Amino acid sequence: MDNHFARRLWISFGIIVASIVIAAGALYFFAGNLSANADAIVSARAALNKQNSVVANLAGLKQQAAQAAQYQTAMGQLVPNQYGLVTFEQWFSEQGAKYHVSASASFQGAATPSAGSTPGSAAFSFTVSGSLDDVDSFLNFVSAQSPDFLIAFNSFNVTGDGINYNATGLGTVYSQ
Image (tube, rainbow, N blue to C red; front, side, top):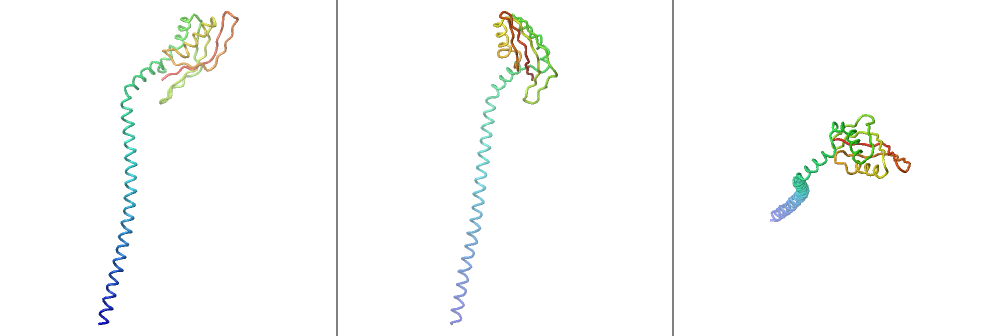
């Protein structure tokens, strides 16, 4: 009988130890699996938030497409294509006549063509002669209010004798 009791004791003790080992293994497995699942959920949420942001941006861009088309048309009128620059020198002289000044422009060197969203450009030199107020009005119109060309004056020099003034300098006209 002592043998039988000792044997049952060892079997019971083995079952308890085996149960503890199996429970610890299962707990370890589920804890690792739970951590992996939590990481997957966090990653999925981040991806979903990013997709929602992209969809919202796309919706906003689609809503603004009509307005962008109007601006693109207006910019196309303000910035002619490179071949539209052919009329620039004549236009410059004609605008000078409207402001009662003698104006001439001539291109300097080769034009730089547009590349992607960067506009093309062509350097030019200019001469304007007339009264100081007329020269000022003409240069202001050409550089800030012209509906035909986008022009920047890079440098200029004004000389005069109190009645007639001469403005000479360099500028850039932009193209598509």
